[in-house]
Image (tube, rainbow, N blue to C red):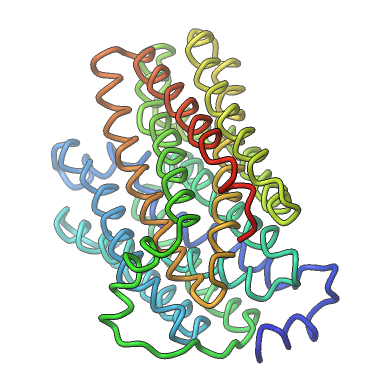
Amino acid sequence: MSARAFRGAGAPSSRLPRAVAVMAAAAGLVGANIHYSQPLLPMIALSLSVDPALAGWLPAVTQLGFAIGLLLLLPLADSLDRKRLILVTVAVAGGALLAQSLAPTLPLVLVAALVVGVASIAPQILSPFAATIAPAGREGQASGMVLSGILLGVLLSKVLAGVLGAVVGWRWIYGGAAVVMVVLLVVLWRALPELPPGLPQRFREILASPLVLLRAHGTLRLHSAIGFVVSAAFMLFWSSYALQLYDQFGFGSLVAGLFGLAGIAGSLLAPLAGRGVDEGRVRANLVLAGTLIAAGFLLMWVGQASVVALVVAILVLDAGVGVAHSSNQARVFRVDPLKRSRLNSVYMFSDFMGGAVGSLVGVAAYGAFAWAGVCVAGLATGVVILGVVAGNRKALAAAV
């Protein structure tokens, strides 16, 4: 069934198809696979009798696998059957999660984690998929809803892993995630619409397409750059907050996991931001996002001795991140509707690299200047975002 036919058969033009809600939930569940390890590292190190520093490679290897998937697999979604590609990757992720739960040594855990990362790209296929089946003029809201699911998955994965891991152990977390992938396979097989694959291309051409798209589209370059800075701001905080919680308040991993709940409110703003792009308010969205990010880090700095202030700051920061990413992605998808997966591959790779840089800077800033260093670096990201937006008024106002 074509996207046009699905829109006509599935829902009136004023409503999003029901499949979009399923896509949002699936995006959160699959996206969570990449982030379970962060609060579990001390437990994994003790269980496998390895140095915690070695166990610290686990999230990095998973992220590396995800980056590989973004570059090698995600662009294929424009040429292959998207539904089939989603089902295959979810199945592989489920098998890798099971292997991770059973692996007796750290090297085997790391190999399984690499495969989990590579195979967990379904959310990035689902986001442009949702925009494709959405009624005309509602594409931003649809992709924003899926982005909300992704952000919720990222945040709740930390909470679930931190809380449940303390009760049942880390292996059961990964085993349970594998079972979730099996259930999700059945749900997605029944819920996702059939869309015809795009024009077939040679694999070499697909791999080269990110550079071609970057050279050809200024909008993609602009929003990828903004996304890089936004993700750097996000990971500046989330890579170092547990250190601050322990040093300032004496909180352990269980409480650190619970702090992920504070970021949920921000993820709920993503569909509203996507709707704002549909209505031509992308610049206003990004000004709001940069202001919220800067304000969040300022509040963290001023109120660093207060748990309440930190929670409020997380709400503000994650709200800014959600608004920015939804706005960026909605604009990127409009560059070329036939190449949305490849466009998303470029944008998400930039997003990932920004997060990696933010993680490194966050840990280094905390080690050198304590919490004030993290907050100053975060404030700088907010100022940079506002500066980029101010310097690109015409580009952001232009129709895509």
